[in-house]
Image (cartoon, rainbow, N blue to C red; front, side):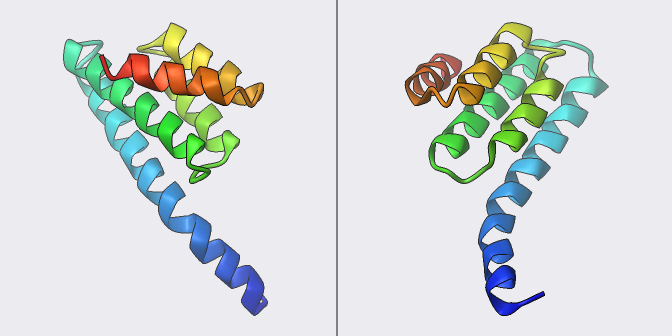
Length: 103
């Protein structure tokens, strides 16, 4: 690997790594106890975090898509809305959804 490629990989790795770990942790929590209120709150927080990270250009669209696929089991409407907004590159829709997930 050349030096510039290594620098690019180092810049992207921390944001995706933190998000990936959070998503996996919340997936585990959601799957371990069925569809409890805690699981719903956890997935709402995960989708909100993912939306905000995408808005900050910290995670790629593919990460959002993967997170939404997992979240769809608990929050099908919200996951679908986020995935479609990101696919359309509709930043204002993502902002609105992130705000609604805070409630």
